[in-house]
Image 1 (cartoon, rainbow, N blue to C red):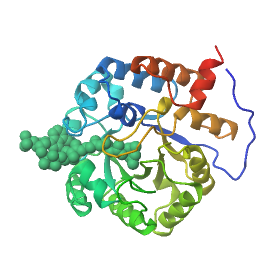
Image 2 (cartoon, helix red, strand yellow; image 1 turned 30 degrees about the vertical axis):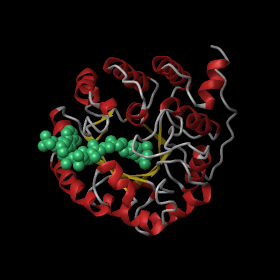
Image 3 (tube, rainbow, N blue to C red; image 1 turned 60 degrees about the horizontal axis):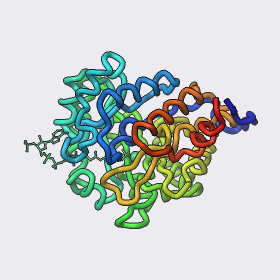
Image 4 (cartoon, rainbow, N blue to C red; image 1 turned 60 degrees about the vertical axis):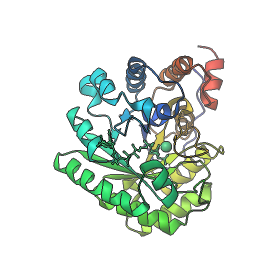
Length: 310
Ligand code: HMG
Ligand code: MG
């Protein structure tokens, strides 16, 4: 398989953790319902490709996201390994369902803006904290690790620009509920590189160091890799990505695919940054998944490598 020539930049981190969100962020947005055993195979193939963290599904209301209504059945199929994979939980009911399956990592997901809090969570910006607070407390009491997402960090399709100070205030409040990591979401992919740098500087200033932060880029405007490079330059070492570039949020107008894991792996490989992922295995997985979904992967690297033959 073709790989990029490695040219190391000593100012960049030596190792990065890729947090794979394809089975969750990717499949939550698919029109077709993917059979549960296909999802299980997708997750297992991603693990085999070397992805160290695979977010498997969501325990959200099944009417809100019917695509992931089979969360419990999926975890049954994944067995012991599934318990170490993070799942989304919005509230106590979601946590109860996750606890029943023995999961050890959960993620809450808040909004930096009022409108998206209403659309995605049926709560106001302030009410979201009241929903998450008991859930995070109980998760911690059960010994679970909690990640917090904050969405609309770089712009909101209804409200337009989102002030950096507002993102930092919401993000810090979510993190301070008891999370071990805060993932900063460019839900609709509008951010650009200097915006990333400024947002990260503001979080650092507010007392959240880079090792407590992850970046979650969607690629709607083709900026995800440039933004990931900007975040690498700031010293970020956890990046969310989705195999084949699947993804989007059914409650965010104009949200399209996530940063494709293959595109990120290509960049990291070229920069000589360790990531532990087998690119050819990953591309085979995305080509297979694209076949299951009946449409080609939007990832440039998947297309290039799939076309280049074995
Ligand atoms: P609600 O309708 O306000 O819920 O929805 P409620 O608290 O009023 O409860 C109503 C009924 O729903 C009750 O049942 C609850 O038990 C039940 P009843 O008493 O009437 O029989 N219920 C549940 N059932 C199963 N599982 C649950 C659950 N919760 C309540 N977890 C809620 C509020 C938060 C549940 C709803 O708005 C929801 O599920 N939203 C999820 C939307 C979503 O999943 N969006 C995509 C993920 S976020 C994302 O993609 C962004 C991200 O990738 C980062 C980025 O890109 O920026 C993370
Ligand atoms: Mg997302």
